[in-house]
Length: 136
Ligand code: B12
Image 1 (cartoon, rainbow, N blue to C red):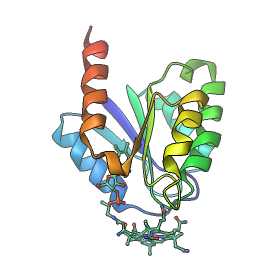
Image 2: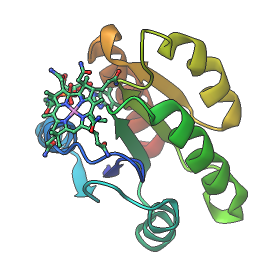
Image 3: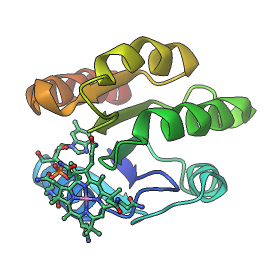
């Protein structure tokens, strides 16, 4: 699978992205990592150009939920990206309020939301189910 790893426009943290890149490569993915502080429009351009099997958004600066809502609404507004699998994870909010955001993020268009406290296994499960679908 080709996986596009990105963060949000406001987020300058990078080790989360490097971690995901290595983890996904270890799991057999081809990874394009867009790096820190990625403008929404660049995410959309790269999704349209590269047509990845999935886009993985990571954010840890506490603005991820807000930024992610805005980003996924823009992605889903592009007709050719309406069905692109997309997930978000990390430290999405502050003061432990992230769980409250998950339903809104899913409603706006993310296929799954992975709050850091859940660990990495649910993410692996999601990718395994997606890979089975992609290979069919
Ligand atoms: C290093 C660091 C920085 C460095 C970053 C340098 C760099 N090149 O990355 C600097 C100094 C620049 C920085 C800046 C800021 N930081 Co900072 N930073 C950290 C710190 C100490 C470590 C982050 C790190 O590298 N972790 C290692 C990586 C591998 O792990 P991770 O990021 O935690 O990601 C893990 C999980 O979240 C998960 N994950 C992440 N994404 C995804 C996605 C999916 C799909 C899945 C399944 C899992 C997943 O997997 C990773 C491995 O377990 C953390 C505190 C901490 N101990 O975590 C604060 C922290 C992330 N920073 C924080 C803040 C607030 C900021 C600033 C806003 C501070 C400020 N007022 O300026 C700015 C942000 C500026 C911006 N525009 O984004 C807060 C965020 C608060 C929140 N989310 O509730 C933290 C948690 C500190 C704190 N306790 O308050 N920071």
